[in-house]
Length: 247
Image (cartoon, rainbow, N blue to C red; front, side, top):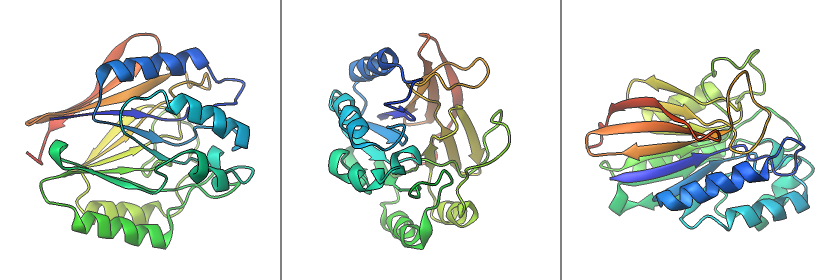
């Protein structure tokens, strides 16, 4: 029915950035030919213009449609002013009717701050997009900061400051899937009819424990949805598999 690649936390420009890992992931994703690639922020390390230029070069290698939202690292050093210039589709929603998808991108970054905030204007935008979405579409939200705490990530900090309000809008609006990054730890929570999937870092060695750099593949089939983690070590495993209520 639909195939989605979810990558996050490239951190281009960081000492821990690994070009080989990013190119490997891009080549694998191009071979898979997903219907859309969703990138949930921190494409740069410091928000510098040269980092954005370099990151944009990598993203241009992706052959399929992409939707990109910024992360807290992208908003450093006035990087928030350059994101829209060099990285396309900043605030866009994307509707792929033939694939049954409605994707809503949110900017949770705050200039020069590590914590996140969606804000009332974007919250209203989110609510209207969910309200106006066709009922038979699988509604997906993409943002950088996690809304629900992620296990094995230590002390909770740098969170979404208005997480409660945004969570309420997501649940009330009937969103099916929420994609985020930020913590470099892949994990899936399922709350009622909404699934929250966090991706690891696709190309950084800033990893927790024995985790590898990774990205997620989401298979939306007629009856089931499967979220698969694909690691930079060549291994993969299923993070979650559950019924597709939008069938």
